[in-house]
Length: 113
Length: 106
Image (cartoon, rainbow over all chains, first blue to last red; front, side, top):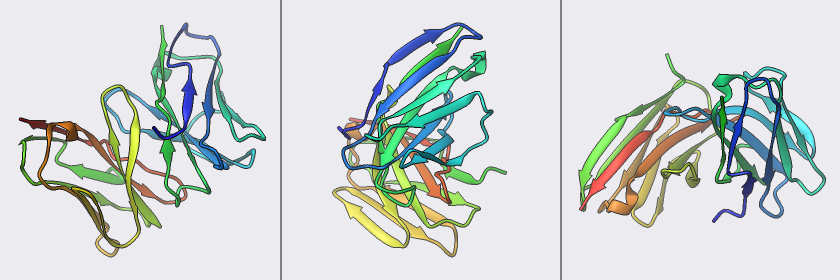
């Protein structure tokens, strides 16, 4: 157990809808990164938040947005869902950026129909 | 060409065998992570290293920064080692390989 939790575990949405995924970081960690993992692929970096500010973004459109709260929990929001958004969404917390050990949550599996 | 290449993609072993998984990358990095992902998705960080070698139990990770290559070794493999092993070099973010699927049979 890493101490990082994600909710919900599974989610089914319809194309065009909006979704919010949540991540609770390990205590003391001020950085959270979000990743998308399509079936059979490695995770892809979506963005990272450090002390409530976006601190790096991967090649994802603006309809993927995030928030980090003062308690360092985080949300990933996806608007106008597309079928290709179906994936496992992982968050990872750390004390600092990617140069520090990453603690991954169990993921949220999103299915878009 | 992918920035991170892992080999082999799939690996089958008998319990007790010595396992090696290789990772080559093309980008400049400050560190490299080895991760383990079990069915169902959960990812566990095994190692983070920027030079030399690290050992944790039956797992050993090595990295050669000049050659842009890292290896993960599992000694005395066990069925519970069956998982996907992912190499993730760190630039200003993690870049993930597609993983090596390992199955260890009794």
